[in-house]
Length: 177
Image 1 (tube, rainbow, N blue to C red):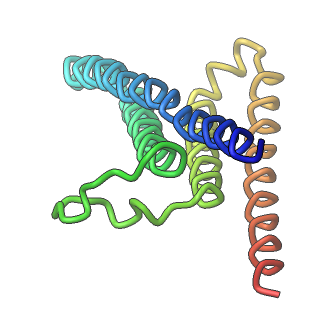
Image 2: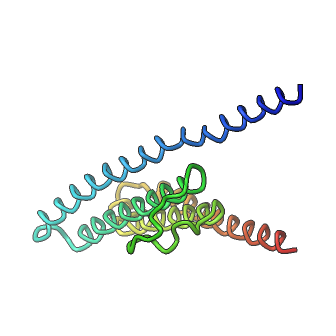
């Protein structure tokens, strides 16, 4: 009886452990999303290059901020892909590769959360800056309420980021004691 129970338990545990591979297609989908983002990046870069002599300085800066925004999102996706895959699926065996990122293999779930919220705050800040650069146009359109909501949402991201950092510090201090 004990042997049957042990065999069932081992089968269940092996199945659960193996189920982590169901996450791999999600990470591959995120890799594809970086490719799609690259296409939009190239499209925006081409548009900026094409318009460089006829567009205003503020429109050029807004376009460049859009490129920075996409770059941050792509970097965030890469961190999520690498770290998430290593945390939940399997180690990526490129330890000897000269271009291996320094943080790879060292970023735990808590660190990943902080990186994600930091990137979201940065992306939100860039969007807010673009909004402020377009402020005269938005004031003419009477869209001040929209600007206020963007500031509120951005501050919610900032406060969330600070709270995540405080919670992680408290959790780390608790582990030490």
